Image (cartoon, rainbow, N blue to C red; front, top):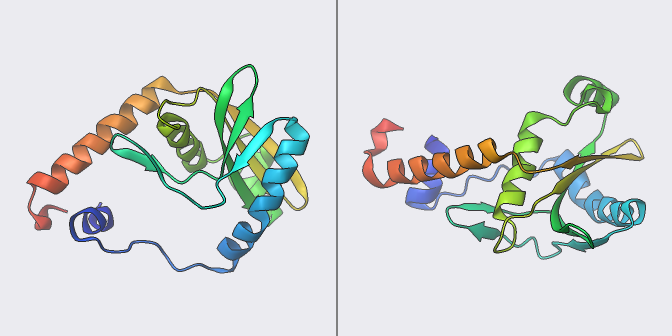
Length: 164
């Protein structure tokens, strides 16, 4: 909360420096997006400009928008898992996506592009294989995201700095 306060109240840059895994993830991202388009046989529009999308107080920088003729646009979030220990521990060998990635995708779906997206996919690259986790909206989480954003911005505007 302190770092977010500093960002919103004082414009402090809170991004951490890029490490090797982040660098490789960014390099692999266009390849994963292209593979997802091929595997899923859907149109995929990469966010090549890394543009930030907003809807109300919420925002996101999604990796790509995926277009399905039946369901319309959805969010596509790519992840690189560089070792099997992480895959087995955090992803339970492909049985789940880690909670923080689920929340990230849900926020991207909620932000949408003017209107919320009604579906999304996490594409996880693991040692040369891509695994897909398709998701629908979690209404309770969307409600909580809206409420948390409003509560936080209210706190930034009304509470003294030492509160954080």
